[in-house]
Length: 257
Ligand SMILES: [Fe+2]
Image (cartoon, rainbow, N blue to C red):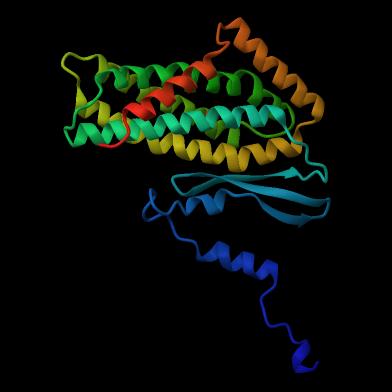
């Protein structure tokens, strides 16, 4: 073979192997979330065609991996888009909560009403409105379509919901204490904020990609209409818009120092 025909770079398979073997455990989780690389879906060739291989991690350890068929068709899932929009508002709420924690730490003039509102936002919008729709409508459909709960991504998401509720409860108790139990509030918020940010990242970048591959258009229409039904039956109609207005107001109020 002449020199100019020699392969001068590694193949995709070799590059993937190198990438897998050179990863280390996360050193600075808040700055370099390297665990994310291991969670991202990898496309591999198997006897039945292409599939996605997804690894489920906890504390950097691989809990398991599984394959889901990769459909050549990928639909735009409206229900996924609506959950994403809710998540964007939750992320803005987390940014506000982070600002409040900085103010408490710096002993600056904290808007005390904000803490009560933040707890209400997390309990009512993040949990009762958003997580409940995931748990009662969206996740069960994904489970029916073959995404596993036990040892799979749905189990991880559900566990993180439970853990998040525990931190929000601690924040609620601390914010209602007389006087305010600032230390407990800050400690719980410091656990909750990264937990939920990572949770949202995993849902947006792993779980939702799976959903787009396994859900049919009929599933999507069904989930979308059941979301509206849940909002009506549980008296949640208009909550998204109302909390979005609140967030805009607090973003103004907490602007600057
Ligand atoms: Fe979730």
